[in-house]
Image (tube, rainbow, N blue to C red; front, side, top):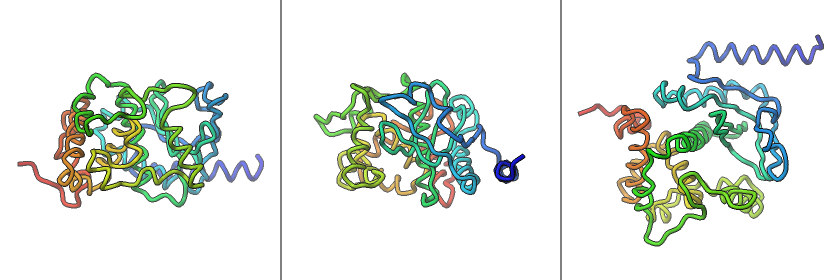
Length: 274
């Protein structure tokens, strides 16, 4: 065996042993070495998927963050609707950098992780993508009517449908993300900055305005991780209404996931039931 290959295998075993010493994730977490795990059509034009593997030294840290995020769901829900999580070093579709995506047939979430990422921001990507999977598999349990009623009169998303409808060779989310990256020369993360002006209208960030799916995605990301979401609910009635609709959706999947459940997820001091 060549020394480099032996070293790689040894480090991989070390990562697995480190994870084994901690709480195991409810579904597999893996670290693909290439884009071979993606659906074949994604590897061809116009999608032209590009994947780089996550360096071994970051794998344990990334897996620990995602394991913590997965533990915020009832385990039966995760096992029913999620087949696993793949973590890579970078992810590009249509020559645009992505923070994550999901594969509906495989019931899998794919996330890109970098050393500079903070834990909460990376965990939010998990909840963002998993909420899309849950929506896709349970659309009948989501009230688009109640959700849309929280928007200003006359507002129309860039894309229709609960799961974002795609016209042409790419989604509206991809178009918006690509344009932002080209304009700023960055990652497009500015699209995910919380805006008080937008919250008056019922949207957390500019990205929420693309489609119902993206709106739900970012609401879910904050609902699972951000203590400030409850202050947003107090100050902005439209946000509060959408949080109610989203919690009702999760309750159809597991009745324990009520408002108190979510408050306890983000509270330093747990809230006792009445």
